[in-house]
Amino acid sequence: MASNPSYGRRDFLKDSVLSVAKAAQEFAKQRDAKPDVAPPPPRTDWLRPPGAADEALFLERCTKCSDCIDACPPGAIVAHATDGTPVLFADQSPCLLCEDLPCIAACATDALMPVERRADVRMGIARIAQRLCTAGQGCHACVSKCPMHALAMDFDSLRLAVTSELCVGCGICESVCATVNDHVAIRVTPARQLVGTDMK
Image (cartoon, rainbow, N blue to C red; front, side, top):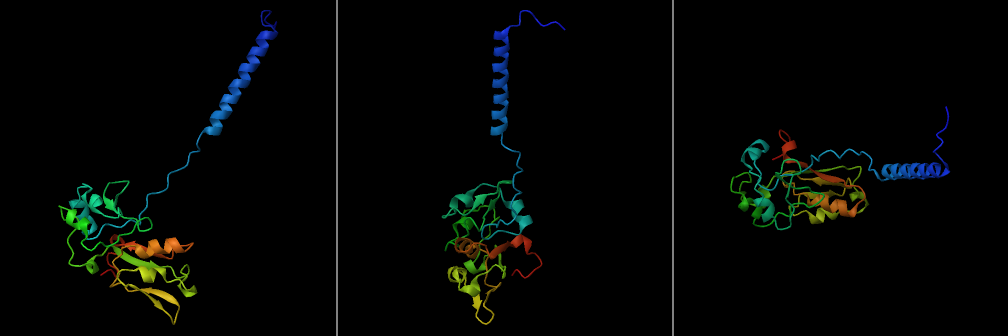
């Protein structure tokens, strides 16, 4: 096939520059493109605020008004990313069991029901992963911070124990453990996951 007589050296150089520029542009696009990373699965370890009704009844009554969220002094209660209902994440900001429980007082629909005293709150129960716990090495941080005195050290076995009748599931122990240890050895199992177990 005969070459185009009008296609000269200048045209060749121009096309070469354009080709290189296009290739560089494509490379930059690929380099800057974010890889397709699947979002992390939604967390299931959230707790309901103090006084929460049983889960089915709570969901019937809760209007997602955010009044309890606004009333929480430490800002521990947040809206769940999926459905907007109020939850707490113990490892981020546990319930501080405010003396007058303003979150309950703010709820107008009885999704959060009044309790006579803080000891009657039942958000969950703390569970200890003994293989991760450093209590035998002298760490008793969670014991000293538990507002309900639900944690105790068994000095014979050098292991921590949870008194389920006293534990309200506030998550303070979990939060403290996360700040002083490399591995969190104590976590709160939410009340909705304890139906039919030893939850009081």
